[in-house]
Image 1: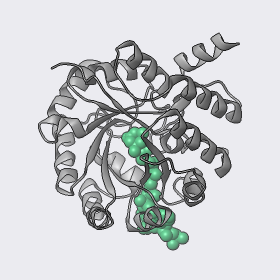
Image 2: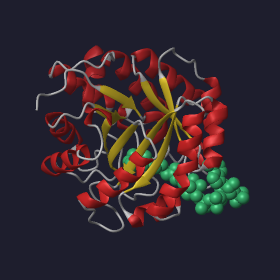
Image 3: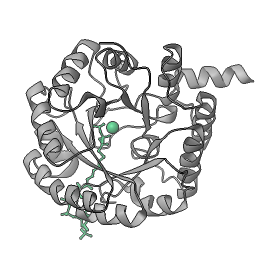
Length: 301
Ligand code: HMG
Ligand code: MG
């Protein structure tokens, strides 16, 4: 397998990145962040989550955020939709892609979306149907594909089962997610290869949190088996409120720096992403969690 020469990087900072922040971030700040990210060249930005505000208060501004952003032509603005109530809100807000998010772990499914895996697939069916009818892209996400904070081990068979369920719903793209960042490169290759037996590899993505510092290695391992879509978060923001101890997604700046070194094209301007990361870090009052981002920013002054 030769490495892809082009990669699609999905920026998830405005959603996965910010959902875990305790302080409410004003919609205007989220809007500026998203506008900076689209200007930097991201063609797909996860901008919102139409979930229960009781479960994830930070995402309560999603409608306002979607209404306030400058829509850059061609950019896909995605939103999480756990149920029809969320779908209706995402549709009204003008999302280009809706994300149905399930889990390979039964225990995590209960904690995150308050239902079993089987119930989640049944709950997603009307969303999938409505998304197709409205001509929206449909993405599926599989949490805890490499390990679960509640039940521990998750098998490759568990991942393949959910993949088949999401495939049957007509997903255009499916994410294999390491929610708690525990995976290592050998395991990643095995899981990705098994996933590719069930779904076209060109439409599979890797969503790696960097809790154990393995995310870049895991992306490299995924590239080696032919995965060409990855999720990342500017300034390494993030964490899941329902996965205790899970830290941020892999930082977009770090991924871009690695891909640039590998001569893999993304169409994204690393310097502009560094600026966006530093903007967000200033707002949050702490240093960005991006090694490459901070190094590049330090070189400027
Ligand atoms: P539930 O409590 O079982 O839902 O939660 P319900 O249908 O019984 O409704 C309860 C209340 O929530 C009602 O309000 C509903 O109106 C409201 P009340 O009558 O009590 O005032 N409600 C909603 N409000 C706004 N938007 C909605 C919505 N739905 C219900 N869409 C539910 C079930 C799925 C809603 C809840 O568990 C939930 O919102 N979960 C989302 C959790 C979440 O967002 N987690 C983080 C994202 S997943 C993630 O980060 C992983 C990922 O990054 C990949 C990876 O790393 O693994 C994607
Ligand atoms: Mg995540």
